[in-house]
Length: 413
Image (cartoon, rainbow, N blue to C red):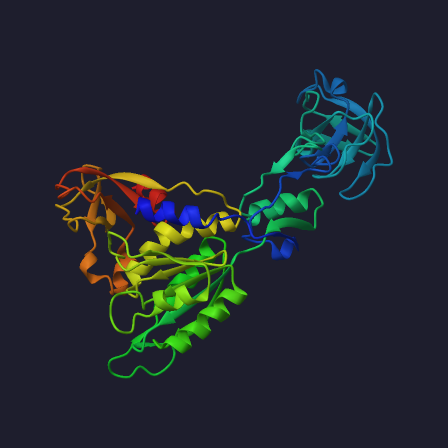
């Protein structure tokens, strides 16, 4: 595995494929391409946080229920309007939540502590300077870096951009990823399923996986295991995409033609043909005139695991996310794990807490690499080195999580 990664790194350096400006309505889940500096203060003015009366705090000193302070009412200010009245010593202005503080005022008394009598108010509680007032720039200061390059723009970040008046944002372009399924036995979901056929799982799972790490997937459908058909499909994929992923057609059978075809399409061609891993032994990697091609095994679990290990890190960097840090958790094995002799073995596991509070890792059979239920059940995987004979029951291991959310759910149990 390490040698394969080193060969790939020498042959291809992943980097962002470009930048583009999008409206906020288009920017959801895109990756920020530059730091964002606030062009203004938020809020842009001192504003009231309550309904009440704005005044000078000094005028309320000593006021209480039994000894109210009388002030002259000299106007009111509502949300969205510029205050017309000014506050002088001995005066007050009625104000609603969110409205700007008029000149001369420095605090707000809540409505509950005021009794209004014609053009005067009786203040039954004192306030300190700045009380019930949100100062200009107290949320965001002008010139402050509010978002950092590489952040994924969720609804929260979109709201921050809108708050400072920005209607467009610079994001990284998504790497275009062409996905090809191979094999005479696979049928597109939604079509009739003849005896001996199976539905194409990989095109859909790999497309979703590409989108999850910031890429733009293009499902080119199922290609038959014939040299001319495969060559035509791969040429089309390379012409339209930044990365190509195929599944199936990379083992040692008579219909496994992808490595031969790849070597005809450009230089340097195939750089890795098979790895000492389980599952995923037939995995093949190529670089064709500067574009990487990942040819994954046909079994769904194997394909998705190898995608996680080899393809996802490349796509994340091309999407502008940078190097992703794996999310791991320490767990205790529920039984003995047996790796494949001489091969790096990845044991998919499910996780749960036992009665003592320990996190238990239980294996999902790697022998059923074609079973889609393996994908649904697995929370992560345990990596076992080539030279290790077994992992004993009760041994503490590191589990690499497929979904970071699983970590938080385990912490809550």
